[in-house]
View 1 (cartoon, helix red, strand yellow):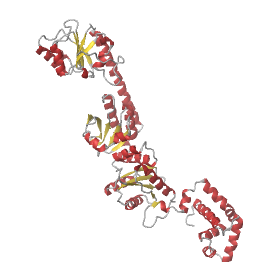
View 2 (cartoon, rainbow, N blue to C red):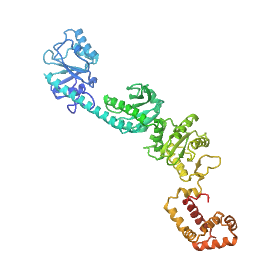
View 3 (cartoon, rainbow, N blue to C red):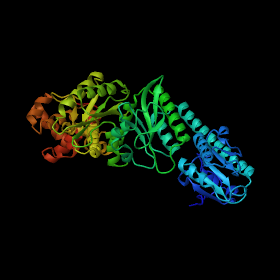
View 4 (cartoon, one colour):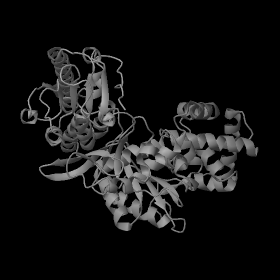
Length: 546
């Protein structure tokens, strides 16, 4: 049955591809001939790369493929075998379609021609009315050349964009993000063991993009060259330098047109930019990926719990049926040495402990352990702490508490950070331990963590300023006497002995202190207030241990 071709909304092909047979048939110059598709309706999406007018019996010798062949039908052979040979030659050279005008020689397409075109899958289109073939050629060629010029301009913009990224020293995350934005497709950078290091989704979630990543990636083929492959039809390109592969890029398919030349250009330029980024930025990609995910977890910047689970799983971290523990190694300002990070990576890998390791901020290294429920965490934390202290003896190591859900690891990171904030430099380590944890935070360390809080400073000043001022004006040491008394829990005899005073002198000083502070030292509540204030003052003065 004859069918009219699909109509197009305009007179140009969609941006980014050559016009198809359907696009050309919808042009007014051809639509005026009342075209009807006789065979090959499903092949109307073939690209048209040129238009060829012919009245020869062997036009294929003048074709290179992708041509829309226009003919009046005059040269068609009389015999069926000759017609089949004519169609076979057009098909073998890759002609896009055969358009025959039914005005001069034929008024209906010959049966032999229809059968041959149907057998070879060649679109056959008839024109019921006379059409100016020269005008068709001019219009279609102008459209093709215009499309090619647009494609060249877009390709040039792609090259310029990646050149600009390279010149400003963009990191791998920025490069992959640019690729996703330019292509409108999800782009993933993976390493040689199929761990997804960077994922920039477009039109999908991270969970959808990275779900069961390793299995899907291995099914996509070896990735030795830029190609579309695998059951999902991924477009992949190797990332390499001087013949050595470092990783692979994968562009995931989406609803809409298939991958075209521009997608290939984007992916290959991305691979080139990543190679330069790897040479410029000395930090291994795996470390960068760990840092990114750790910061999202610690700061709760991930889009959803499912997304962050997908990111972690794609990096090889178990996300189910285990416990998670955050450890922070704080080396302070100037402690940005990359050696502890690399060393801890190696140690955890050699110990078979799944973990993410990365710098959370300058001088602060984060570790997220993923342990089996039956594996105690303290030996692992102790081993890591000893290694970190061997590399940075002044480092402070804080450990949070275990959590059962990956989405709750921010709490473990907050607790580890709280421990570090409450640990002064030089703080003695607990017995048989190389790290600090929440139960270690006593009153002194709590006040140390809050030392910059104006309310603590104000409280301390209001409680003790008159005593401090008196000591300053008169050269006395009543503040020290008060400290001995409070440290002795109100025992005057013990306080006198610690201060090297007689009991009578101690009583006299305590009465002076009560008068200056307008307080009752026999009151347990008042003694507690003064003890807190004095401890805070010691902390604020940096006089720990006195």
